[in-house]
Amino acid sequence: MVKLDDIDRRILGALQENGRLSNVDVAERVGLSHSSCSRRIARLERDGVILGYRALTDRQKMGLSVRAYCGVLRDADTGWEELAHKLADIEGVVSVSAVSGDVDLMLEIVARDMHHYSLVVLHNVSNTKGVSATRSSFVLEEVNSMYGSPQLRAHARALKTPGVRVWARVGGGAGEPSWGRAPAGFGVSVWRRCW
Image (cartoon, rainbow, N blue to C red; front, side, top):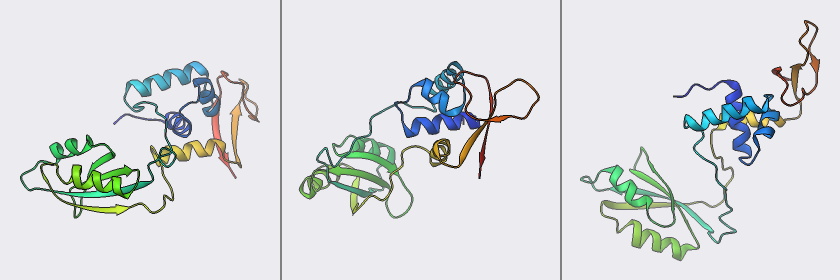
């Protein structure tokens, strides 16, 4: 496990909210200099905490109106890892997870319509060697969808939540800190205070 401090979590939260932020924008949001923030982001990428950047697409607008979770029971003599990799290669399968409970694997499948979904499950999933049975549950309406870590999203929300102010010691003196935003690139100590 990689050790993350509060600043790392705020950087990750900001990038989870908007992966297209420039390093300058991320630095401004988390109260770091551009160079310090860039070094931290590079370290998070090098350590494998940040796996990559990608575009999230609207499946409805792409003509994929059916989304379902398909539980898969495997034959007793079939290894789950081998089967999971075979199922992951099927077009329309967007995720495969080994799960506990009454099924061995859970697939998330997207399709154009019910006919297309039936073709994926009946002709591809069910005919895969090692699959003994399937059980489908259809998504009727998505209430909330989250990518990444919920804790990190909370950090990102706190950065832009009304009522949360940044207390920055902008001077080097021993006087009281002043409220306000320190200039980007200025070395400051930052605290969040909520009321």
